Structure formats: C-alpha cells, structure tokens
Length: 302
Figure 1 (cartoon, rainbow, N blue to C red):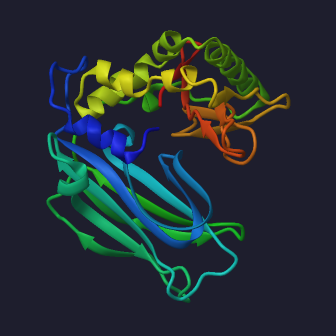
Figure 2 (figure 1 turned 180 degrees about the horizontal axis):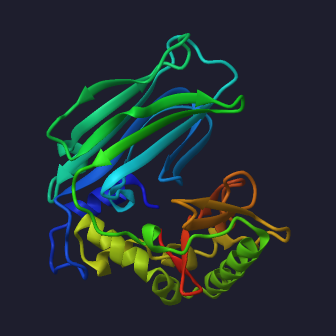
Figure 3 (figure 1 turned 120 degrees about the horizontal axis):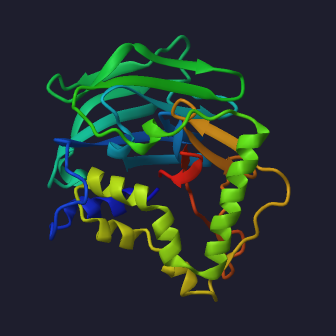
C-alpha cells in the first residue's frame, strides 16, 4: 500500500498513454478517518489498510477505489484504550471525486459517520449524507461493538457505480489451516530470495496484477505505477537498508475478503518482509503484500 500523497501524484499525472485495461469507473473513492488519543486499525473488506498501535491523534486519508466493488462494501475501524473520555470522537467519511480532480482538494464527502465511544449508550451517527453520491450508507448495518479487548466501528455502504471485478474478488476461497499457511510461507521465502538478490524486475513482474489494477483504479499508465512501486531505493542504499531474515517459527495466517485474500504476520500485525534502517535503531520499512491463489499459484493482489 502506498500513502495518500503517492496516490495524489498518480491521479494528478497528465496522461501520456491509455491504461492497459479499459477504464470502467466514473468516480474514484477514498476514506478519511480521525481519532483523538487512542490506538486504531482500519480495514476494508477485512483487508488492513492502516495500523497505529500507539495512542495517537490524526486525520488521515486513503484511496480505496481498488478495494471497492459494486453493491455492498464494509469498512471497520478498530480502536482500543484503557478508558474512553467523554470528549473522545471517531470520524469516518467516504469520499468521491471525478477522474482528473485532485483528491486532496476537490474530493466530495459521500457521507460521514461519527461515534463518541466515551458517552454512555452512544451509537454511531450519520451526520451528513450526499444523496447524489455513488456511495450511500446502509444505516441498518452500521454499529459499534466491544469484545473486551478492542472496539469496532462497523460501516456498511452501497456503491451504486459499476466497478471492475478486482483480483481480491477472484481468488480461490482459502482454508484457514496449516497447509495454507505453509504454502504461503514458501511463497514468502521465494520473494525473500528475490529481495536478497536485489532483483527489482522479478519482484515487479510478480506483482503485475497489482500494477494493472492500480493503473486502472488511478487512471494512470502502468509504467508510472510500476515505477512508484520500485524497490531500487532499498537495493541502491545498502548502507541504510538491510533486508531482515524471515522468522524461523511458523507465522500467522490472516484471511480477508471472504477468505480470498491472505497474508502472513510474525508479531501482531508485523509483516515478515522488511528492511531495517541500520542508521536508526528500531526503524524498519515493512513490505506489505496481500495475496490471492488462482490455478494453484499464489499471486500478489495488493
């Protein structure tokens, strides 16, 4: 996943050639969310987009066109803290904009949900809705729950715009078992070997599906998207970045999107492919990769 600023550059780029796949979308979509003073994690279709494991104050945006399908979609914002205060607030907004517009300055709000988790008996409130927007809240399927360890703001929404069928909808339904985990671990080891060899071309070739779909979602040429995902920054600076070893012990299998998307983690949400910044102790750059399996082969989807 790339940060919002990268995506803004993608959509703002003047097109010099048509995308490799026919553009089917009229609008592009994003999510904006904010918390004040607690840890959080944002998921769409069960796929993690962001994790902030320490108490934080922020207001962030993330593109989600490539995670949005026609009809029903779900976003979940997980939060946790010892005790919420009465003034604590969670806000989640769904955004949309036309192709060619700048999402940082020209995006419109489809709807916004606010939750006050420290107020007794409070429920999520839809504070604004644009009835002309392609994204509409499903009011009967918006709620806030707690399991004693963390709280979940669940937001379901309908997308009225026809969308491409994305790779995360096409993968085989996976079983949550050791065989699936071990098979995926072998794919991680294969990619780790490519990272160790500094084989940027092979790594980008392995992610060709991701490149094509992000080009489609952002309406930009595939060559530009591929360039933005290049790993040469790590390979060209060995005095700064050092590839970490994969864990010896079995990793944790994570499934999402109806068990069609998979990834492995080693500790909490930490993904096992990472470059340690050897000039700053404790700083690492994690390579976040999400997989599907088709025709018996693992394929990088996001």
